Length: 379
Picture: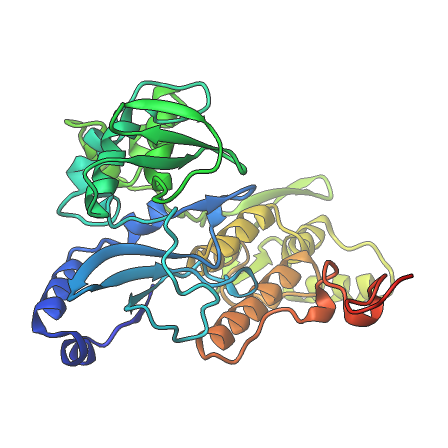
């Protein structure tokens, strides 16, 4: 998580009182809890790119100031990092969408990031199952909270239910109207749908131990926490390979994957023969395959895609050793691509990257390619 905040400067610009409230919120913000509840996109469940969402709103005269969480655009989303900033209505920095998105706002759902309010998750998410996953039972109460935050006693609220469809919720009459154009405010996405964790628990597709600890404590009260949290576990024992009619061992020695049952001279001779299109020993062949395209390649790719570079490196080190030199192959390509994407993210953070240019956007057409020039006259 990147922090684009300077509390001393904020205190000078917005006053000590606002800075004190901001400091308190930052102390109680749980970055892993916020990441757990961030909006995601299909098909891989990555954090929604190019998003600015409000975490807290502070009143400063007639101009609200927001503590916001931002995600980089898709071309610079390596590491799946989130940045914190203060937004006062001005446009600053390289982010393409600095204004808080009214659909993805969490200032009315502090239990999704504030440890002081995490226990409210069960109350705010308790609703009857719905065929389409809508939290219909919660809509009236959540709509009243939204209208109150906007300074209204009642009225209508727009609820987006997928695609370009929406329904109008009349809070005064407590009924759902027909689909159609609806004025703001928009019901936050966190209040529109059934909490995914709750849906998975009801369907018995996940155990409480696999949830975030604060989420599990709120949804399954009274459970005893798991003494062994899930994480990466490397296999340090030797692997058995059938080689020339015998069971041979392959293991890590001094940080390198080696064949234990072959001496140095034999390994050197077999590598020379393999260089002359010979067939290497099964032990050496397995080591070569692991270096080029190991069985853990999908796991490594998924970890890198979701920002777990440490876990991906631990997976590679656990299989090949920290001192392994990778030849050309799928594994090396995946690691090099991840390194390039991290550079793109660094350029975005420094304000030096501009993303893909117009030539790389096939859906955009230049003036020369237009079927009809904009100011042409036809008779």
